[in-house]
Length: 313
Image (cartoon, helix red, strand yellow):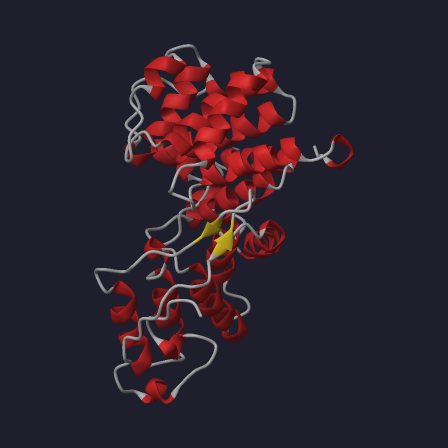
């Protein structure tokens, strides 16, 4: 069985959900959360801060509260307990099928566990319910991208980028709803989506369009945690070299799985497949297995290993 921190939030609900504080039950994590696209077993981490137990305790007092269900699911994300998180979102969907949020969150988690078709289905549903939402568009594009649907990924990200000054998108934006209008008002959001869109354009054979898109991003932006994406865009413009960037790789600002994937994509565009594949292999070995760059690198390597007749695109 998988490590279970609170039995009352899993599909088998117990008497602990009657209102009493749930017991914290820890068992050996024998089952992986996912299998990588290269066959590696991927496991959850411990929750030393007790975030899961605290969220479950609150949920036990009101087990049908949608906000508490979402909070209990979200509490699992940093320790990678994704299967339990997915189960909680399924419960929310059953209770509130027109709420876009559980589809968006569950779609993200399906990407994490390498179930891309499920991710696409959820995120397309979320887009239908919240077409201005930035996070839905971002993750739907990622689901298309790691599935090899590069044209669809580029189209989705460019759609959201194109809504940066849309009146409806601006009206929808709030503290609790990041809309596509953030692509005009928030440099961090803009560079993250722009860099992924450029990658998708490159992989769909539109390198010139990708270069033109990269040049829409000016120098001197304050982009916060999205500095890796910004650095890749500067690399695309010739303002940084690969050696300069990779020499700064760390476990925080410049994660290899983020900044390295953008560089490897440009290597592919330049015809240096050997250098790209070498970097993809390094990224796929990164222990941060939920990272989007790592998942995309796995997809590249798995695609390269398939017989030519089975590859797409």
